[in-house]
Amino acid sequence: MLLLAIVFIAVTAAGSAQLIAVSSLVTYDIYRTYKCPQSTGRELIRVSRKAIIGFGIGMGILASILLQAGVSLQYVYLTMGIWIGSAVTPILLSVIWKKTNKSGAIAGMSWGTSKWHFYMANVLLYSVW
Image (cartoon, rainbow, N blue to C red; front, top):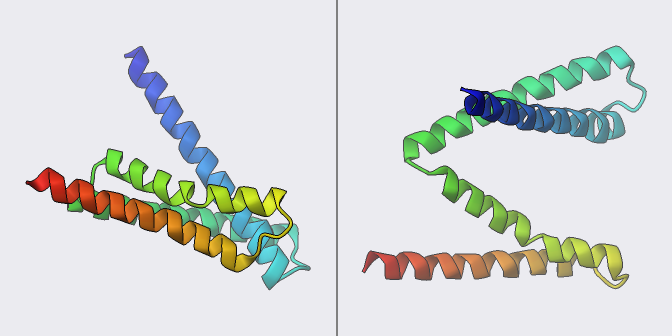
């Protein structure tokens, strides 16, 4: 019973952190920066709450779709790691190398992702036979 409580607390904390991150990103980095720079605190709270509700509903819909499609959590984590991992090198180079440009970063991400697609195609091809 204690282990179940620990898992529940860990999942709840991770979900809360995601909601706070998305809310902050939408509210301050998008809404306040681009849409309404002179917004009041009350408006920011309203936008924050709408972002949390929208993100929660969107993730619920995505989870339902993945569940109905029979996609396992292992595959979701693998795919997420590949998509995020292909962006690590371009982001690192944009921070430490002054000659990095937009087309080079996009090419690096595309190259990393295409390598993953090639790898997955081979895994699926040889695992079926």
